[in-house]
Image (cartoon, rainbow, N blue to C red):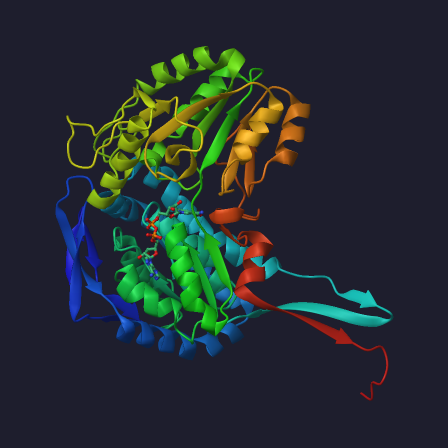
Length: 485
Ligand code: NAD
């Protein structure tokens, strides 16, 4: 089961205990660019999950006991190898998930390397100063927790997986990863990369397969000690139930319905650019601000400018440098996105841009869409679409803006655009979201906490927050007296 994708050799079997493992069954990976079959992928189930968890359990004591400097040195070599193979990874990922090649080359793959380098460095610096309580000394230590299950989605497959694999391994855990079935290829390349970097067998394992067949037994496995899941809310509910009997700590990074709040005092051009930027990756971005809220006083002029700018978006093959947005990931997802748009229109919303598939390009290309006049409370304003679909609503004043921004069961991110520093301070304090951007978007240090409120998730990752999650944090209290040696 080896295949060549965009000139790159990919082995699509599982990766368990440092070896490629065949599966009795396979599934077909389809490229969203042209809906052509790309590769046959091993379809794992309970047997492969058991084997991977056992391998990770056996590798754990040695990996956990390694000096942190030795572990970090290996992980920095993983980062080096990713950097050396950015072009291969970018080409394969683009063919597999349809995201832009130029984004993969310049942003996503270098960030995947950074996910290892940053946490390798962080693990070496991680220290908690001893405390003192009534003459006793208190020491806090971070012990590796054990086998970590990592389940991730397709919208940025390697970046989202490495953003959890990096800290889990840096903390001294071993990993079983279940990549997304709609874009499974770069996980296979990562297995090669970790081996070349000298990661011992069993420390990192990949079980390919569908959520129901490979993901479900992994989440229910009594051998896992941490579970990091990135994906949709319904799947998170299923996973939480599966993991509950084993009392496994969970980190959930889920969806969003984030707002972009534009005040009349905003830098107008910046606000327009930030609105149009939400079409990136065809809107398949968890953090995307798809609910545009704009102050009445500038609403007409703003919408006009957004429409003009959005009219210049080039849609096409993601491998072309000139392309700004490409296709959606799969036929079921394409139909889901179109379903949202058609129901919104039947419910009274008006498409002032797009509102339908791109018939010229065919396949899975959906036109950038802007909807106005959506009915308050309707699903297009409340449910995550995960496609190139923005809604525009207006507000009269700051209080109403805050109410509308917070009127969601999600709480992943909010973007504010205002020229008034005091207002920015005030409003950001009143917004419920894991991340708030003021006059910017998508800027974040890997040391900062990342996660969402409400239905957007459970917990935070990033910097210390990752180590808090991937470790058993221990407090040891030493009495001041009673020493005999
Ligand atoms: P999904 O929930 O359908 O699938 C995500 C992963 O879970 C896949 O690997 C899938 O195979 C697996 N899975 C499915 N059913 C499972 C089960 N019963 N047991 C175990 N694993 C199972 O989500 P998706 O459609 O792949 O991804 C899109 C979603 O991900 C969106 O909601 C998006 O907002 C979210 N997302 C969130 C973040 C974040 O950091 N907050 C980042 C990217 C994407």
